[in-house]
Image 1 (cartoon, rainbow, N blue to C red):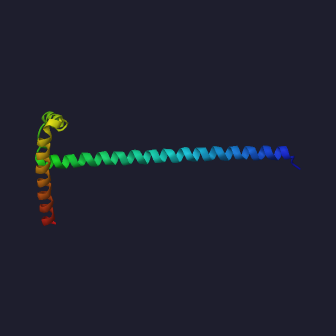
Image 2: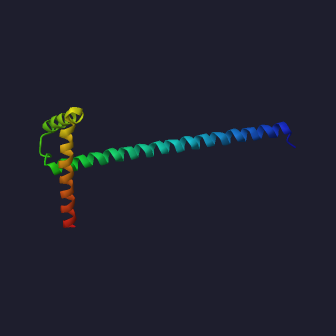
Image 3: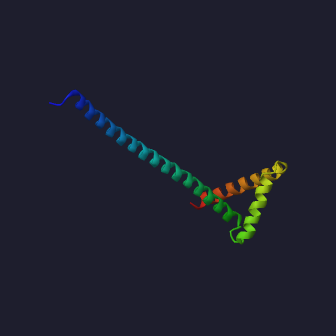
Length: 111
């Protein structure tokens, strides 16, 4: 017959092993969750990039060389971040909204 002390020792060892497995499972779940978050963020960035590419295509600027295009984007960012140019950016927004609405209407007609 096993003494109470030996029995308690065996239960203690079993509990430690169970806790270790639970900790490993938790770490695995957290890593999987972090990977999912990373993938979701990556998909969001890729979606935005594709949208910008589509808009660049609609504007007809895809044929520009990359240096000119980057310079134009940098100038655009400078204007966009300048609060004194809010009227300019508001005008751009109206023009863009009009163009997108026209593009959607054309697309719906062709479907």
